Each structure stands twice: as structure tokens, then as C-alpha cells.
Amino acid sequence: MASDTLAGSPRTDAEISGLDALEIAGQEKAPSRLRRGWSALWPKLAALALAIALWQAVVWTGWKDPWALPGPAVVFEDLGHYLVSSALWEGLATTARRAAVGFAAAVSVGLLLGLAVARVKVLRAALGSMITALQTMPSIAWFPLAILLFQLSEQAIFFVVVLGAAPSVANGVIHGVDYVPPLLVRAGRNLGAHGLNLYRYVIAPAALPAIVAGLKQGWAFAWRSLMAGELLVVIATRTSIGAQLTYARELSEAPRLMAIMIVILVVGLLVDAAFGAADKAIRRRWGVLDQAGN
Image (cartoon, rainbow, N blue to C red; front, side, top):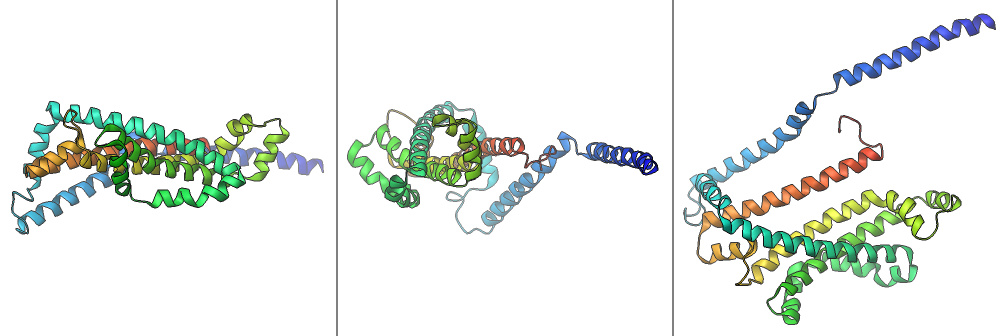
């Protein structure tokens, strides 16, 4: 027995040392931050280059006249002038303010509505399917009512942005709360978490991934609703990205129109990157993302 114990100790130490060595070796082989950044960047650059090449190929076919479909060189030259103009930054400031205010209101409404529907059976029976129906309704369909109620004003745009985004946020909250394990809720109650503390310390952290997904989808609906609103509700005294897009179409300025579309696309990509970073941070906190970020 003693010999087995004495013989077993060296094997245990060797196994532990081997595991430590394996872990150290794995850390040494982990790619550097620069290499990880390049691995994430080059597919996007390749896709961008392919899109520009296809765009140029379509222009070379002569499918449309250059005044209707200009080539990439002409558009990017106009985009350079647009980026240094005051019109872009004034319009972007107006659009960003509308997006921030509208999305913040939609998040507040969606969170409260989602929590209420998720925890109250009567509300779920009454409003559960209605929220999904509102989410599937095109934002453009709300504008006749919005214009009838608020005329061509900021309130009409705000109304449609909130209605477009809030159902997605609410559905994210509902699905997140639904998938919180009941055992976790019971454990929280046994530890003394009740009422708001139960939501704060147990339900909200467990539902956070689904809530973030709902926020991301809600932002997409809010941005689409806002762009549609600015195209339809043009306020002469206040420029915006959507209004500038409308003016470019009316004046047949195809290079400027496409330059503005590129700006809208870039803004969407930047916001998506911010949501992606938040999602990655949450997954790393939950232990489902390794240190290499995969």
C-alpha cells in the first residue's frame, strides 16, 4: 500500500506538470492581437474589393448610362468632397440625434413591455402574438397614420421609429426571460432574491444574451424606419441624411446619391460592430468564448 502511494505521487506530479506544460504551450501558440485583427479584417476587405469589381464590371457593360449609374471612381471622388463638406456633418448630426432619441425611447418601451408580458400570464395571452405582429409590420405602413396624426414633423418620424424598434426589443426580453432555467430562479429565491432583486441579480443576467440580440435587431428596425421617415418627411428647415438623399434623387445627382448611400452603409456597419463587441464581451463573461476571441 505504501509502495503504491509512493509510486503514485511521482505520476501525479508528472501529470500535473504535463498539463501545465500543455497549457503554457497553447498560450505560446496563441496568435497575436495584430494577427487576429488581420484575420478578421481581410475577409471584409476581400468582399469590398469584389463588390467594387462587380460594380465596375456592370458599368463597363453599358447596362445604364453613366449619369444614372456612375462608376466607382466617380462616386468615390464625390464621396471625398462630401466627407469634407459641412452638409454631411450637419445632416449626420440631425440623423444621429433622431436615431439616438428614437432608439432610446424604443428600448425603454420594449424593456418594460417585454418584462411585463414575460412574467404576467394575462398580458402574455393578450399581447404576446400582437407584439410579433407589430414586429412583422413594415415600418413604411405606419407613415400614413403618423403623417395624419403629426403632419410632416419630427414627431411623425419619432412615432414610426419607436413603433418599428420596440416590438423587437420586447420580443428579445420575452425570449430571454422564457429561457432562464427555473432551477436558477428557485436558487435565487432561496438565497433571498425577491421582486426587483430577483430580476436584477438572477433573471436579467441570465437573459442578457437574448436581450442584446433583441436590442441589435431593434436597432436595425429603428435605422430602417428612420431612413424611410427622412425620405418621406422632409423638413425644409432641418437637413438630414435622408433628406439629402431625396434631394440628390430629385436633382439626378447620381454620384452624390450613391455617396450618401455609402455613408448610410458605413454607419450601419459601425453600429453593428459596436453590438458585436458587446456580444463578444458578454460571451467571454459567460465563459463561452476563449481568450483568443474565437
